[in-house]
Length: 103
Ligand SMILES: [Zn+2]
Image (tube, rainbow, N blue to C red):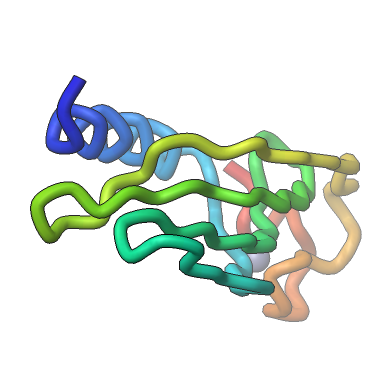
């Protein structure tokens, strides 16, 4: 499989996912470049999915193929907890969750 195909696959995947997920934050914790053609990025993200507040950390591997960085693989670690309808929305709007980011 070429890098382009991999990239295409992940774009499609990300597109489907982004429909049901509301991103709250994305933070890069660490990045390294052990080889000119290989890189690692560790990031942390928070998002709302199906009335759950989810927390994700992942170390992702990227490879530079013909001048373009492609996502190769990653090992995500996720945790989530349910958001109750009347609690303040985790997005920081100060509204109740049911009147804000609930799908
Ligand atoms: Zn909200």
